[in-house]
Structure formats: structure tokens, C-alpha cells
Image 1: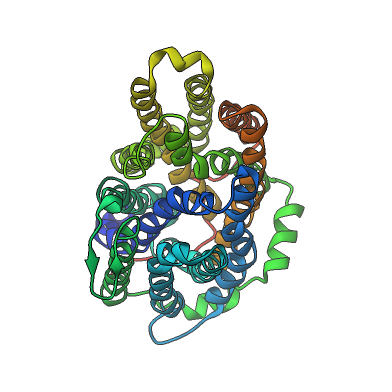
Image 2: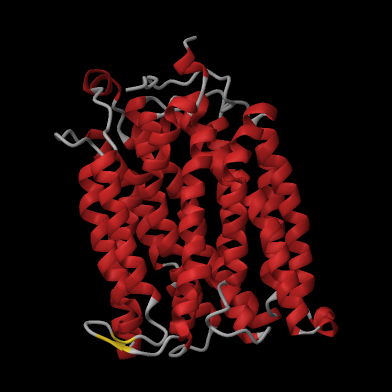
Length: 436
């Protein structure tokens, strides 16, 4: 094994550049998940209905991500197979994202139409953005590389929650933007998305491996049948496990900011701070979690993390319950931020290492397909979770969503015990990239 192949270091700079694609997702996702439910809440009082509307992006993702990922697998252009999708769809996402708070001021119909347009573009581009990394990085280093790009995603989330969200209270009138109250973070984030897209386009060059890829292209349906029919069903078990852990995650995600405002009495500007605690933990631990999993094994790292999340979420359920009211709203809010920081450490360990486990079982020609399958299962969970947990809030209150998420993580931990493949030392099917 050559030096280049024996160390992740030669790929580090390129991976950070690829990570700007994830940076755009981090910028938009947290602001979207935190404030769109609040915007909807000014028109709709039933939490289950808000949760149902929040699944629109996930419904689109189930259909769009596998389709566009497969489409990009088979695309051949002068600028690569992923880049044409990235340079068109990310700027369109930025424009529609910037307009969301202004649509919310007009009417519920305007808001839903803008949300639909945003998610049409954003979910279409997600697959090509994600697949850009395994196209380039050898299988044995994908945990480390996934740690880097998730660090970039976390950086985007921190900028959104700690920086941009603080501007929600700024009330001035600006040219083109009009009144900025409860709106300014969105157009600023949109501008950052456009700049990040330009960085990816000008500084990331896709590898040209057409000859090998042409022989390895596998249709989506054939890939699904192959995974289900394999004697070792490790890929299928991973997909089932990730459905459950995303079921828990997506059940809580849309309601943390709303919980902070309605129960703990925080302002809109501070409502994203618990999410920022998650993002800060992800920024600090995304890269180390990849190295740790390389050393102790990806499966072991995931199961330990899932067990830790069960405990953390049960503590969160206590903080959300009337039993914790004696602590006072301020103490509960800071305690929530603390457990969300811990949550972020173990959640990023799961995200960093689960994708590489699937990619380890893919070929170069089917990386996009496996990426699409990952999102098909994760978004299927995201479709069903928010309306279900919204109903739980309406019935039993906010503690119910934490208990629900803890149960989901426990089931995922049990399913992961059935996985046998996907470790860094396993031989990947894909052709390994060489250092340019």
C-alpha cells in the first residue's frame, strides 16, 4: 500500500472543499426546521397538522433523491456527473429559501407554495451533493471524510443558529428586502449558499472514470432486489436501523424550537440555541468520531452511540415533564442545551459512520443508488414521524416525543446487532480514487 493510500491526509483539503456542499445544507436545514413550524403556528394551532406539513420535504425526498442520484450516476458531462445538478439546483434552493419569511407574512397558501418550491430544489440536489464525496475518497477513509464534510455541515448549522438566528429580532427596512423583522437570516443564508456553490464549482474537480463506471451501472430496482436477495443482508439491516434512528430524530427535530418558546418561554431569537448546541457538538466531534470508528469499528461505535442516545432522550423527557417545573424555566432551558450538546456528540457519530458502511458495500457505478437508498429510508421515517409526534404533543405533551425517540433508538441498536459488513477493513466494491 502506497503512502497516499495509507493515509487520509492527501484527501483532507479536497474533502473540506466538497464539504461546502454540506455547508449549504447546514445553513438552510436548521433555520427551516426551527422557524417554519413557528411561521405555520401563526395560522395553524394543531401540532399534528404542523407536523404533517413539515413532512412535505420528506415526501419529495423519498421520490426525488433516489431518482436524481441514479440520474447523476449515469450523467456524463464535461464538468462531471454530479456538478451540473449542484450548480443549477443549489442556487434555486437559495432563492426560494430566502423568500420563505416574506411568503409567511402574506398567507398560509403563499408559505406552503414557497416551502414546496424550496424542497423540490433542495431535495433534488441532496443526492448529488452527498455522492460527490464517495466518488472521490477511497472506501477505507470514508468515515474520516464523512466526519470532515459533516463538520462543514455543522459549521453551517452553527452560523445559522448562533449567528443568523440572532438577527430575527432586527427590525429595519432595507432596499429589496423590505422590513427585516423575523426574516433577515433567510436572505443572508441564501447568499451564503450561492457563494458556497461557487466554491464547489471552481475548486472541486470530479474524477473521470467513465470506462469502469459504464460496466458497473446497475438500475435502481435491480439494486433493491440484489440487496434484499443477498445471503448476508447487512445492507438491508443498516437501512432498517437507520429508519428507526431517523424516526426518533425527525420526531423531535421540528418541535425543539417550538417547545423552547411555548414551554420554556424563550424568544424566537433564542429558540434555536438548543439546536446550536447539537451543531457545536457535531462540529467538535464529527472528525474525531470517524477516527474512533476506524479504530474500534463502525458497528460498535454506532451501537454505543445509540445506547447513549436512549439515556439522553429519557433525561430530555424528564426536563419536558411537569416533574421538572420546580427547576424553573431558565434552568430547564440550560439543562436542555446541555443534553442536546451530548445528543449531538453521539448523533454525529451515527451520521458520520452509517453512510460509509453502506458505501463500503457499493460499487463506483452504484454509489448514487446506495446514496438514494439511504435517503429513501431516512426520509420515509421523516414523513411519518413529525405528524405522529405532533399528535403525541397534543395528547400527552412534549415529554411524549422524547420517550418516543428513546424507543426508536433502542430498536435501531437491536437491529444493528445483525449487521456483519461495512467496516473500514472490508474490501469495498468501488474503484478507489487516486490522489490527483
